[in-house]
Amino acid sequence: EIPLRLVGSEMCIRDSIQAKGTFRNGKRDQVYTLDIVAADEEEAKHLIYSNFGSRHATPRRFVKIDTLEIIDPSESTAAVVVAHFRDE
Image 1 (cartoon, rainbow, N blue to C red):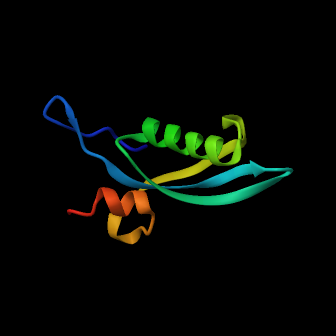
Image 2: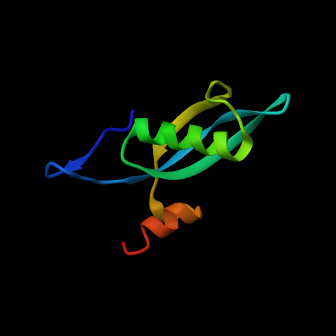
């Protein structure tokens, strides 16, 4: 489980997270690995479901998330991760 980390009472620190799993693509399940930036596990899951819903019209029930792990931002080539951690 990825913990929520807060600084002060308002500001939330975001981590680079790598998700692995499968999603239904037509009649077959397709394996995926997706790097995202999120504050906690709940937000990470929402971003993953939203990604596959908008790009592939896949309902949430057909998206399976096997693992969520925090990764070092320098290991990722995903544009959203590179852009978020550019100044660090």
